[in-house]
Amino acid sequence: MSAYLLRAAATLIAMSVCAYFLVRYARKHNPQLNGTGGTEILSSLRLTGRDIFFVVKCGPDVIAFTVGPGGTCLLGRWSYNDWLEANNHS
Image 1 (tube, rainbow, N blue to C red):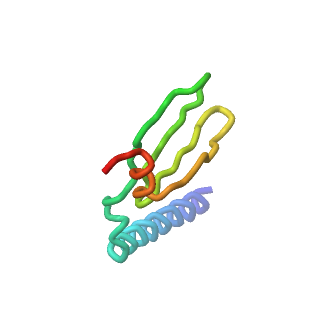
Image 2 (image 1 turned 135 degrees about the vertical axis):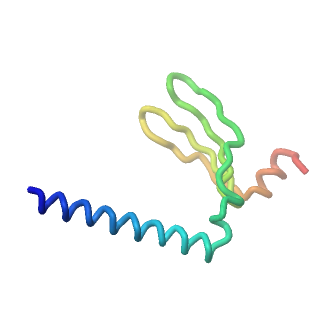
């Protein structure tokens, strides 16, 4: 039993170290992952029951979706510039 726990712990530690270096490498070689242009909730609206409508900016795109007990439904995806033009923002 202890040999199994030791192997499981060693595997988890190895996977954690690999994940750490993967994230570090990705951020260094992809500037979009450095926190700029991340996600931002532009709007949210509670619908009937426990459903919620979200408009979220994800990098250069804007997505609209609903979330509720029945799951998630993607309603649309636009570029951020198109979103601003459609909503008369300059």
